[in-house]
Length: 101
Length: 242
Image (cartoon, rainbow over all chains, first blue to last red; front, side, top):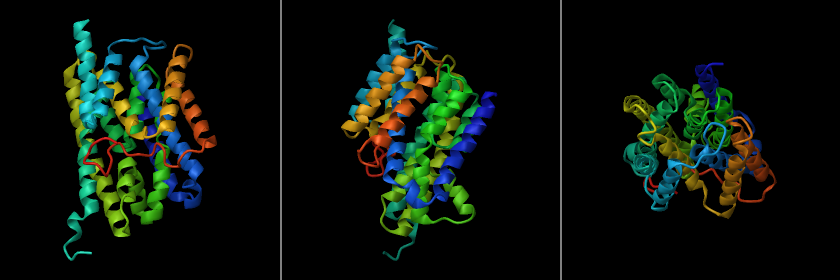
């Protein structure tokens, strides 16, 4: 399948999942256990995506300028800076480290 | 209730400020999508059609890290499951009918659900949901287009540190959800599992492994039920994180 096909399929399924919430009995979907799984799933996936984008190199682990980006972003978040500033801090750190090395 | 027109009630004001704060960072999504190898058209399509920030970032993040379309689809879809919970909450609050139901599903995201849930009166819940949902939709798409066009013009994404920007974006999405000890533990375990799995399995699979760990943790755990369901931009704060 082409990337376009996956983009469109992913979009259809994303809407279908949202719509599912409107169809199922409120009691079932809003049960504490379902809500909990949806929450822990979100945390686990975002933690995994953060890690993968920070250290993966194809099929392997590499520590490079992206670790600097991770640290810079963490500092920006600790300082409660807005999301866009956090992203810019990550980019600046990676670009700067590459320029220096 | 005041007698003025309901144009700028508290829910409308909160919805608008959430829309501006969230919509703005569509620019980072657009730029990162292009840096990850997507065309401007694909970046815009993801924002118009998929329209759920976490899943969109997951989709481009997996492809950018060398994963295939199927792995990207899997990660994005799993990350979108929480939207079903929001859908159920909005359905209980607003009871939309007919075409409104189809439309409200599309704008059911972290931010619109949180804005509605933060209000007590049903009319304010409705205003908050629609103003935040449609406001984020419009601005998120405009800024995605802007970011994608800018990203396209930048050239080599690594020179501008855009791979570092992707790392920062994911940490920024995760951060507001780490409010107590248990979510931190889940995040650490899933990050370690990802790192250990990376050299041994095809790209994209470590994410699914982390998802499985997190789901089992949630199913058998005993923590509060709303863990991990915080909006990226808090409705209480003024656009700040957490």
